[in-house]
Image (cartoon, rainbow, N blue to C red):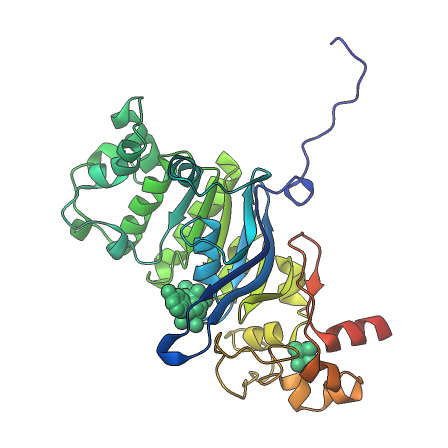
Length: 342
Ligand SMILES: Nc1ncnc2c1ncn2[C@@H]1O[C@H](COP(=O)(O)OP(=O)(O)OP(=O)(O)O)[C@@H](O)[C@H]1O
Ligand code: SF4
Ligand SMILES: [Mg+2]
């Protein structure tokens, strides 16, 4: 030892500098059939830190996949920016290719992600070939398959997707991502197409990869139960915005936003009656003024927001974009009012 400096223990994920960030991200698509433009992602700040699993949850059409694709550089944001390792994403060909090696996408449907005419070996080696890997391809493929839980890996080399179970196919897709030694995985509904019995195994695999490799993940799901099982942190998305975020235990055991409460109330194990959301299904071409959830909000409909003196704000006053950090945050006039009164 040459100095008397105190050695700091490694920072826990919540305190480490973010690996990936979205900053005031907007993705707007041209309106279909004469409709106004669709604000699929409408002002999102989001961080993913090293070794952290963040679940992005919300009902169908709320913008999860569009946000995920923009974080991967597959969709260019209309405004705002994505940074990785503190640097803004460079959308030029070679830089983007290098980025896509570091951040890998795992899709929902393993059958759709795998070419039925490619063997497992070729499916996993494909990424190495695209990125002109200079090392021992066979060893890298074997290691990735083993890490994804397909052991002994050589037994799977010459198999075709139709010869595998759904869970094994999803493991092959994960191996195809792992072979490039990414720092972060974006998994879009990774277990949605799998039987309940194998879902747990795939989720356990993602947790093991985080613990063993320090791999970070953004897991996109409409299933809050899944978020509970896997995530360190959760971000709840509604109509293009994050409306509530924080550590998973906090958000899911003490939700503040009426939308989060409604999503949780329909889980089979939830106590009490499920909250039935009224009003029109959300449409990103017609984002309501004021709080974007107000046309469906059970707290506004029941008069609770009126009693808290915020009903006018609910209908007229937009809410600030939540910061992407780890602390619990909610975008709701009523939740803020009742918390500050308590
Ligand atoms: N290329 C596109 N052009 C126009 N609108 C689009 C396009 N892609 C997505 N959208 C719209 O943007 C909104 C968000 O879609 P997105 O696929 O991101 O939602 P999601 O939360 O992933 O939904 P799901 O849970 O069903 O996968 C939807 O209303 C969708 O119709
Ligand atoms: S701001 Fe008002 S309308 Fe929006 S979620 Fe909160 S209570 Fe409901
Ligand atoms: Mg989607």
